[in-house]
Length: 126
Image (cartoon, rainbow, N blue to C red):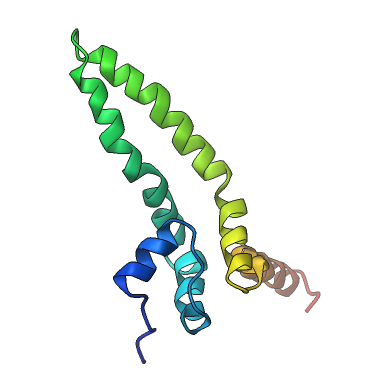
């Protein structure tokens, strides 16, 4: 199996900030946005850059639980909204790269098709 062409470091950094990659890297973009581990990569992209800023709360004097609570008050909604908007963001990135936005639902559609086929096979409709 041949390796997918990967973006250069500069292209990758630009991609992280929303730039569109060349058409020669569409397979890589597709795998990045809808391939195995895409959800984890998405969450890492949105949460890791915020962690250093949140760690600044530890410089606030007082009991440790106060800055930890303030960090949680910011971090938990960030994760919540990142998860809630995951499909929207991934569809937008697919569309901006000239790929079919419905690829995001491809895995769920395959699972629904398997469940339907299994149901029809078990209940005599096949």
